[in-house]
Image: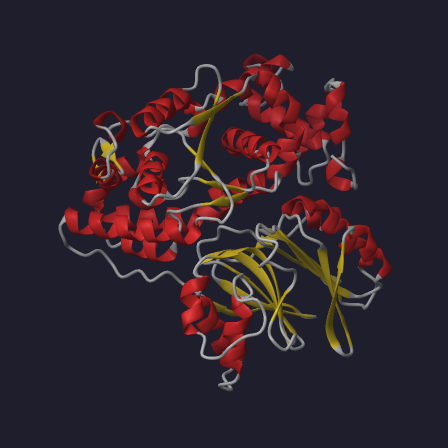
Length: 546
């Protein structure tokens, strides 16, 4: 994982102070040195710094900074370079099929080939075939498997790219004076760019010039259509693909599986055990959490050791300003879901772990939501379209949220279901094998039974994390503690007291684009926030050490 941020001034004015602020805001996303790239008449040059403040000593009108999350100090570097140190790469993410790609190389390479710099070696060989740069990038990115957003320096050109699934984020900004980009929006906010921020579309490659972002190409999923085979045929191949992916993405360092007790994470636990992959397991919830009970049942059934982290209103109160800041959102649902994941990654950080596995993506692929069950009953011909829409929308709906709350604690979230080959094959499966009302994710439950999950576990219905963990009730209680009741909200012209609480707190910490209605409410009804919140006051707009 890591951070990527950069800024170009069209009028050639110095951007070093803005670049420093942007880099500082995202320092939590890695543990390596900060690698600064600047451009002059001779092309790109780079220098590494331990302290981002040293960026200020480099006056430039175009600069890019990266920082990597290094898990293997022997084999990982920043930046990645090719054999001739001609091309370079900054990567937020990781490539998982290095061993496979190594077999594709035709020549020996002197630079380390056991890391994500493999991308540069693939490009290096393709360049010798005198292909157009667009064709080189297409061929390269079609070969790699992983989760990534990156900045490629090829000769005097700079390209940004993002994985097709959209697991890793990258945000773009363009105005008459500046062109900028960053892994998280808060880095753009601190530079004064509050409007017109857009995500880099997953699967896209863009070139940066003084005119802005120019799309080179956009990769698309192969939507082959539904095939008609037996459910046994599909379940056998699905399990093989899942096993292959687990073996590819397993880290060289110890890691945790976030175990909720639902079919998604339970199937991962059983598959990890069958592949003899060592892991620890963790469940997060409040005192009445159904997840804790369910995860304990799975752990007992599979003979797993399980760590339990419980939370209450006090735990949420301690971090709620930081949580809103981290998520760059006041969306009540995102806060509810992000809270347990934040606590999980924070727990792992305290124990010295940097990698966690989770079951995200299975609901979108296999029809895990109630709306999917309704759709297949009422509009069966449209269910496939609905599933594809959920997959395509997942980056903005789910993945950016989960990346933010894990990376704020410098924890890399790996998602075994979100592999391109796995998704494309899964979407050839007839929806009737996925949803047999009232049973959703039917084929995953079938696979779970085949590899040893108990009947009780595979029949456990889908529960939204905000309800099963207890975070929904905890957030409501916290809002009520500060006087945000239903009557109070309605009296002031608002429907949701919890949403009003979150919007008011976001205004306090300096969020841009708060609704005028909310601002007027705060001005006529000042809120007495606790002293502990004041270290976050206007934090969005200044450099503070949190």
